[in-house]
Length: 227
Ligand code: CA
Image (tube, rainbow, N blue to C red; front, top):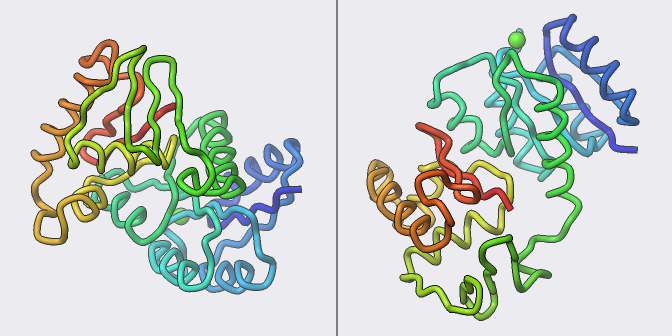
């Protein structure tokens, strides 16, 4: 049984989540307080945490930072905050993903399953040498990309970006994280670099670069690889 910890102060939403998660064989514990959440995260070792950012006793982002000091448990943020800055703060603090309220239960469950699945499988770079899509194959060890029977030439920067995205399938990677990992700390404002390189990658990999199927933009936030 997958143990979920729901941290949320909206009683109606808690009830809906409990019913739906238990129907799908999740174990569910709930609390409306950040401090209790931290205690439960440490003692009950949940497999996944669903976390509202606006809690009565503390900021959800501080909950994320505290949990991350000792645990890699997947954290899915339930956010009523609509600015991308807030979402990026949550992701940069260590959240795995977010859904914006109001959300559909189907979307929440899909994100939840993806977060738990990522936790269960070993990191692709450790175990999986080749990631294949319908249109191209990426060999992570040889650092080669193949499209049909020809090799796609990538620059080192293009490769670096692709590698980060493709080893985190389904996961939003923020612009700030990509810029930091690929270019370093002094480039955090250069989101235009990312647009340029993502366009190049799409031209090389996507069947229809203007309607990408694999290298997805989350406007104002970052990018996501869908395998
Ligand atoms: Ca709230």
